[in-house]
Length: 247
Length: 166
Image 1 (cartoon, rainbow over the protein chains, first blue to last red):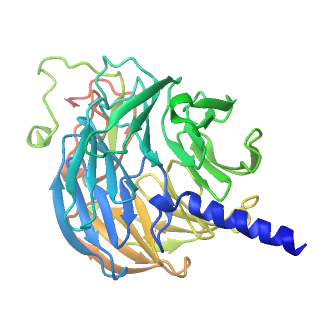
Image 2: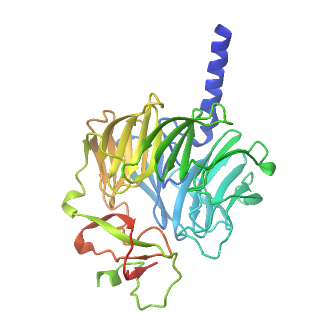
């Protein structure tokens, strides 16, 4: 009994660490399409054209900090280690925030052309690109999941591109990557080898805009409401509950 | 006429842009109402926006009008606790028991230690721009008219001949 309890708490610890690179003490977790994020004692917000920092070392007394001009059409912000990944219409900017109040641009990945959410894990960033969005050049015809090598943040490199249907928000938890396919459902991918990302499962009926994986639970937003699934067994997402949207 | 003065707006006789075919209409609120923030009883979820998870709570943005708070201790049965009315709200983040949210053009910090009695602890005015256009591009939209109030969100609509685009 004691052994199994120890084992369970170990699993708990490992789980708690899974997202530790992108979680700050005392802060919560948002989705991949967020425009507010917290890293350490700083709140970062993105507007259409700028990145604004707020010092929140005293959480009840945020103080306006640096404003950094960005390219046009800023869409998403994702904190990872000492970096911020910012998706804009001119590319994915990587900022170093070691000095939290003085974000410094260290990298730019220009193959991404708009409101493409980004998540990062290990030495890789995962980005979805889709057609039919209102915020990209209409000549783009790819619907892909791109894996970008960010081991050198100053020169992010496309490692591999995987075909998707119409991908939107995404979320990673250790070897798993959940990709919302909008009206086309939800994919669960195995990313243990980024050069050979494999689809573990595809749930065509789970319409998904964005996801938050947390504690072996997946919170899904979709056109019909908010759904919570357990992925303790990731071959079989188990619906725990739903909060339907009222007509 | 107001449209011509706003960034992102062009009169309809400008060269016809490529659009996705979507058109948007601004949803307004009165200036006098925008700074009233309060915790209300549970409200129906209608336009689910961003979500946020912290500790045992799940926060769901109601696009343009506030945040639903759910007690999520039992994920099999999330319980709606309250609704924080914040006009113009789209985004949120939480540290300790302070929730940061956009309230039209302001950033607000709210103490949510008691979700039934939310307190405004700080307001930073003019942190964000007046929403003169929807975030989407290559779309047509009804020009925002500041005389009608503040735009709290943009909704897709079938419009006859929207005069602005971006």
